[in-house]
Figure 1 (cartoon, rainbow, N blue to C red):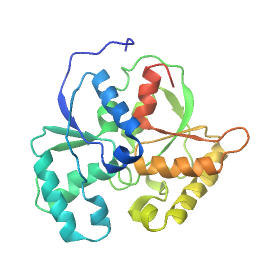
Figure 2 (cartoon, rainbow, N blue to C red; figure 1 turned 45 degrees about the vertical axis):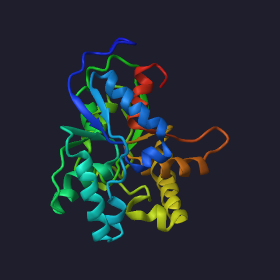
Figure 3 (cartoon, helix red, strand yellow; figure 1 turned 90 degrees about the horizontal axis):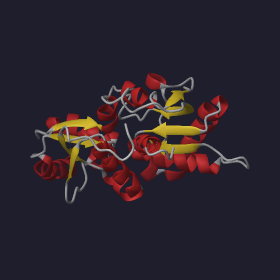
Length: 246
């Protein structure tokens, strides 16, 4: 894809950032939009997103979750296609809202959109990276292939022994990061130490904001004199490579 060129828009989509990306990684939110526009999509954004309600669902607050879902479903109902890189939001819109009686537009994970462009990004010098499967996208969402299909245009993927269906949680899932933050980070540290350091990982890619946070904190705690593992958001990594900054 020639630098600085933007194809004619192919399809209109609505981008949903999600609470965690919006609060912790606003720069990634802009990367997501920039990347989609670079690929030719006309990207529309919701004014005030609010929350999808996933934390309330995990906490067992069914009534409050349904109230939030009703409000959010009204907000997103007019969209034709919603794209998000938050696996939690992705799965809640697709699976939980219908269970509560709310119809939602077609919702896709950003990696699934990017995977449709795999093979057309251009020629890049392949570097070595590893990939961590977010629980809500992989184990619960059933998609292990889309992120890897995207990454193979830019890198050779070195997998740990526990990957895909056997992948261990980063420690942030199930509200663990909120109710037991230190234990949550220690789980991520154990993952870094036992799964990625032994295979020589230097760049670790993931496609979930909670995984990104936990693994980044864990990696920084384990960083030695020679530098540690760099943890990167999938779409931000792709955008950086396309711009020649990766």
